[in-house]
Length: 213
Image (cartoon, rainbow, N blue to C red; front, side):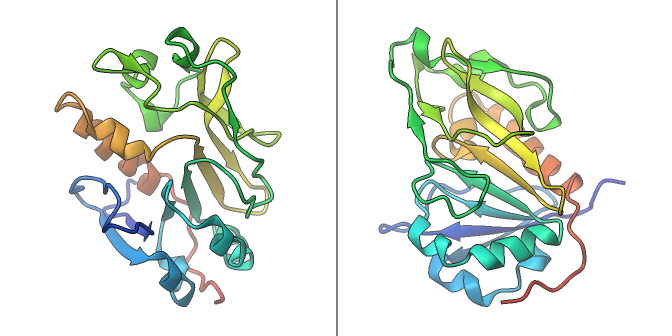
C-alpha cells in the first residue's frame, strides 16, 4: 500500500537564503533545517535525507557514523552535486566530462525506473534548446549500483542508486538539485517532481528505529 504521507529532511546550507526548494507537494511534509543543526535531530523519522549541491561536505564527513546508523535503519540519502569529500564509502570523487559540446552533454535513459516514469532523455538533455543544465560529469558509482541516467557518448553514470545489503539506499545525482531542473520549463514538469517524491515515499524501507546521535 502506498504511504499516505512521506516525510523528508531538507538540509539547507546557502549563504543567501534558502536553496531552490521542491514545489508544494501533495501528501508530503518537507522539514527545512539548517545543515549545522541536523546532528541534533532524530533522522529515523524521515524517509529521505535530502542533500543539495550547496552542502558543506567537510561537515558531513563528521556525521559519517550518523549516516551509517540512519542507512542501517532503512533510510534513503538523496545526494545532489559533486562529491569532493567522500563521506560515504560508496562515494568517489566527481569527474567532469572531458568535452562539453552540445552532443557531449546528451542525457541517456539507461533503463526504466519508477522515479523517472514519463521522463525522457530529451527532457533531461535540453532546457530551451540548450544542453548541459542537468549534469556535466559523474560521481563514479560503486559495484552493484543501478544506473538510471547517463551522459555523453561514453554513457557516464549521472543518476544512480545503490541498495545496501545492510539496509538503506543512496540515490546520487551528479548535478544541480534534481527538482530544480524538473521544475523549470513546461508546467507539466511539476508533476514529475511530485512523482519523484511519491516514489521516494512509497518505496521507503525505513524502520521505526531510533538513530543514535
